[in-house]
Length: 387
Image 1: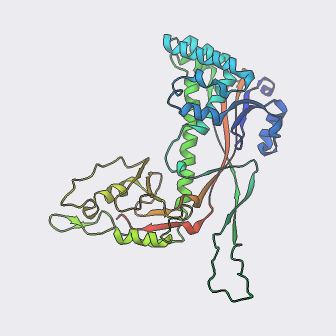
Image 2: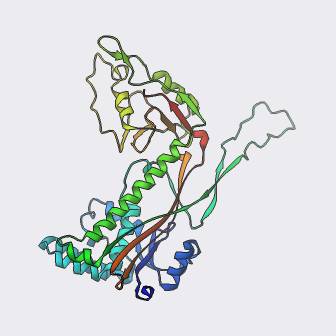
């Protein structure tokens, strides 16, 4: 019986290719619920260009003034967006919770649209996910093609002979984007009891962070699945003697990794990422040989998780050492080219369900993402760099 009372509020979808957030009518929402890939993207009603919004949000001149980037909204929504952000600005200035809640209710579609735009395009939780290219797809599955660079130049060709063609190797990696999602809900009773804060909007924001954390974990798991190509490492933190001193020189290992990638300067196949847990980086920069014990002080230690560093002593200048403690392996690291792993991004759907009979409000977001290794030959597991 309660089904007749339920209402779907503000169903919207983000097109991964155009980065356009669009409103869904009733029939389009039913299609999106069944299989979002069946939507006719050309028939949707655009609300906000998430890519344009993201670029404006990141600009130093506009990031603190939403009014200056309302042109990212579709023309028919721009005036309403200006009213909404003006209302938010006034509510923050006066500290009026009532004004903020009223504004939120009056402009719910636009506010929900901005939530999708900010969390798909701007907010980042973890650093591994940021290192790899994201491929937009409107299809549930496909194949990623990689063309081998196997051109050859021949010397001393006999008269009357023509050089043999040397290009033609192509590898394909199939992918299927996975549907992932989450939801939060609040009862009318809880909303009445909890005063002084919009707890539901806070939960919606936290759900986006949880999603991005999980996507970062998906990347971490894909990195750790690469164990076919290996290079024997050295324990950066190993010490012995009195007083204790470092016993391992990382230089031979660095040269070996360079050789594994052919020592090439070509950006598409050279070694440009080194990934590990954070403490391994700290052990490396504290190694007496790396820091030249007799002339340099102990280097500044860094937090062990969610950090990126470049310009590592002894490493090639174009290598970035990424530290993220979503990596579970505590003894090994990975050397790779960032083109080896791709993220395949499908549509994102968001909507809110209100049920006056059951007295609750539920927010749901669903997204499609798959992380795949497309060039396994460009990923090396470097073993035993920590004890």
